[in-house]
Length: 341
Image (cartoon, rainbow, N blue to C red; front, side):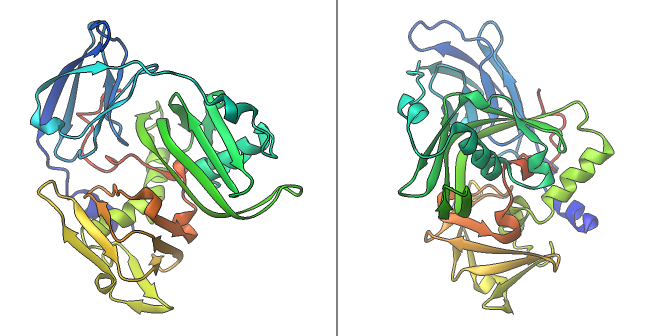
């Protein structure tokens, strides 16, 4: 199983390095901003600005993520077309930083402690990896439960900082949206049966001190195998069978590409994926998942990143994976020289 994984991961490692430099200023005063976070979304590649507001960040062709500029008290900037630039100037606009006070004191039938417990479970996960995670700034998370819709919502004005002890990452997750929808709720008995959960945001992964230990590497390999990221990468490269996946419809094994239609979208390497019918996925002949697609199609890149997050849902093994089970998009790629912590 590991040899199959390594064979797959070695394919995109020969890449040309490029360097992007820039300066970040306050839009109102034109003064430089220091310690602004600059990173490629959902990767370990990031840096901060110096006392002159300047930064330099290197990347390779293996990095397809948007560049994120994030600073507390200012509007976040996301740059897609950075490859066409060598040097950039970004002027950040101040934001009205105010947590939704209505959410804080809203009587929704649950205490904050109860909502936090639900949030941790559905955001971090219940696996040993999710349970090893600790959110370092829970006080910054605003939670609201809608009794009528049986839905838990969360938001935060600052990035959520997560320490994953087993996978040895510190993750900065700048949440855009979170909702956990329950099909059955009994508030009196605190019984919640989840229907589906979706969350979105930008993230930056930082390797912790023990990240190079063999135990950590084995844990990361184990998390990757059979993950949504692994499945999506395999789907993009049309290597599902080679990577250990089997596709079933109504209990019968089927030709995967008679159900998944995959078309190249543009010169950037994106592919458009549509699903003829919802199917079941069996990984390594033991881990079963279901994929449910509620959109006509979704877009996918070579590293497993897909759009239409709220239109693509997984149940079963992959559906139980949460933030605590995730790896950065540059996992397995030859980005050691480019990583800046």
